[in-house]
Length: 248
Image (cartoon, rainbow, N blue to C red; front, side, top):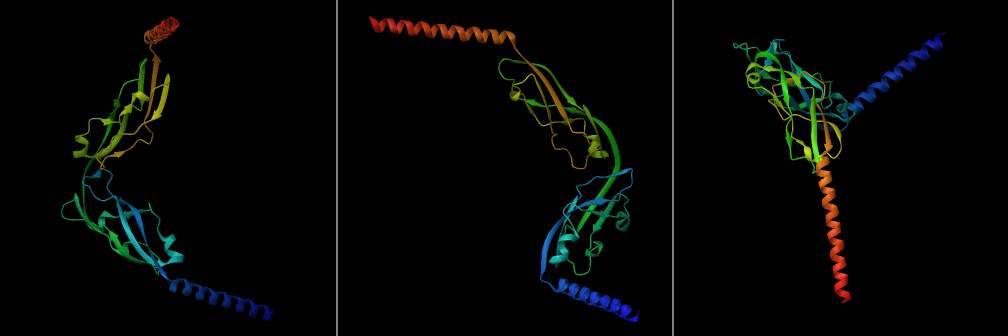
């Protein structure tokens, strides 16, 4: 019994020594540097929105053991800023200063730089609106085609943002849709919007889709067919005349 207890204790001691050795090996291994891009999120009151062009992301340069550093942070991870720490006399203005200690990193990982680490954040009253979508088009339909209908869904989008930005927003414009590509009777696709003020946030998750119906112009088709037959007959007559002249 005592022998078994001693053996178990010995195995635990060996495992502990091995773990300590492995830890020191990892820590003392050749350090590497890498850069991560983090998304900034702010603890805003529900009724407020960001009103200036404050950064939406930061680049963090790290240095540390190769075994650990690649799993510490990933591109696109969120970094939340608690605005309570950065209050000023103006309730609509904050001066942000991000320190390396604000990042929760394990021992052995060093923060070389944070860009940007100082900036101003301004907020204002948030407004939410249902804004109509304007479909823009370019070029003409292919020859011989007529437009029956063109629809966009949804016809409006719910957006929110600071009061000054929303006051200038009356409609949302799509990128121009090229009518010259419509060779079929029905065509459906997803379309994007033109860039808007980046302070404006879209509440809808549904993509914009357009559906177009066209048809062949029967009159133009008949005229084209008639022109084709006349052209063919004229060519045949010219060939016949040329053969006759050659025979004479």
